[in-house]
Amino acid sequence: MTSQIQNTPSSEQIRRAPKVLLHDHLDGGLRPGTIVELAQETGYSGLPETDPDKLGVWFREAADSGSLERYLETFAHTCAVMQTREALVRVAAECAEDLAEDGVVYAEVRYAPEQHLETGLTLEEVVEAVNEGFREGERRARDNGHRIRVGALLTAMRHAARALEIAELANRYRDLGVVGFDIAGAEAGFPPTRHLDAFEYLKRENNHFTIHAGEAFGLPSIWQALQWCGADRLGHGVRIIDDIQVAADGSVKLGRLASYVRDKRVPLELCPSSNLQTGAADSYAEHPIGLLRRLHFRATVNTDNRLMSGTSMSREFEHLVEAFGYSLDDMQWFSVNAMKSAFIPFDERLAMINDVIKPGYAELKSEWLFQQTASTSGSLREQG
Ligand SMILES: O=c1[nH]cnc2c1ncn2[C@@H]1O[C@H](CO)[C@@H](O)[C@H]1O
Ligand SMILES: [Zn+2]
Image (tube, rainbow, N blue to C red; front, side, top):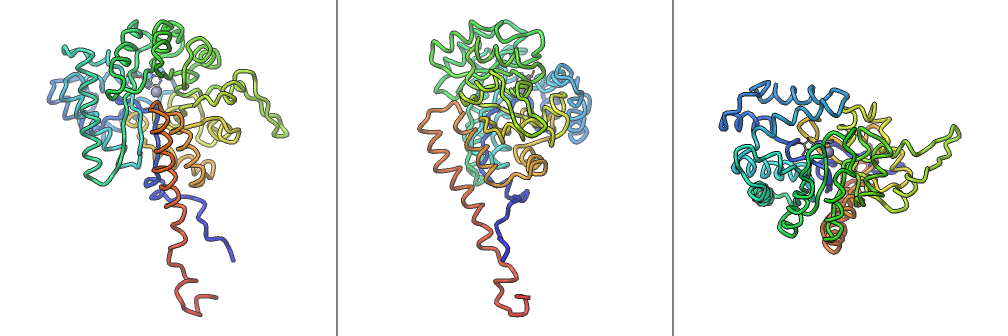
């Protein structure tokens, strides 16, 4: 008798599995059709394509440059159409809807309020519009039979000088839809310590933050983010692999920083497809997530920019299932890791894990028991 337990989840099961997303950019996840419509409505004439399908392809190809700096240039077009209250509400609502449709039950979505002030909105108006959109998207998702909770992370751009102001904004909107803070943008030449005042302020306020580090630039960036800035999580952090040596016999040696990251359970917001595009990894099969998962780092799976990578949480998991043979148990492990690392209160994280995530996977894992197979059809002939 061979086991009927299905080890490889189907695409459909991957989509239905409860997933948790900690690293997704609002301005990196617009629907191409929405960009085209908003450009028409707001009079933005700079789009490289006006057919939604072609525009989607354009974003993926332009982002596929092998360089983080060139990848980031594509955001000029999405930010250009996100300059009014209505546009921000719409984009945020569609974001929550799309994630829910994809089986995401909890998401922290980030954006940089300072990039949405071109037509006169204030920072507060930007935050309130996005929050309103997330609530609207949660409601629409519920009406369609999906449950999702979305929290906002406010990002400051690391080349700019508004980090303290944005950190204060995040603190003011704490408990009002904003769950934390982040810095993003080009990494090389802009170390996180430039924004130490913002991080120190947030620590004094007992608030939470993540830092994009260890993506385009390696260990010094991760070290600064953790040991100078005190980041709760690492945005990417994938270059921690540079501090791990695997010998020919398979034995593994962690350097001091990699040990610290693993020992302290520092969450890594890994984004496989994005890393392939910016050149931080060469293929899914070679992506460090395989080793980091084996070594029990606090690894999580994320989309980064769904538009630029033509991806979704389900797509990311599909790639990983194919590359590493992951099962539903592995998916649950990543999802529980992510939920443990979220910035909402502990009791809510625990309830999400015990009452939403684990039951969701248990349901999927038990499906094989109820499948009609030849051996249960009652016919002697089919017993073989
Ligand atoms: O992977 C990334 N690394 C660094 N910065 C990024 C990445 N993806 C997006 N952004 C930057 O974050 C801003 C706010 O969402 C985006 O406008 C983009 O410039
Ligand atoms: Zn990112």
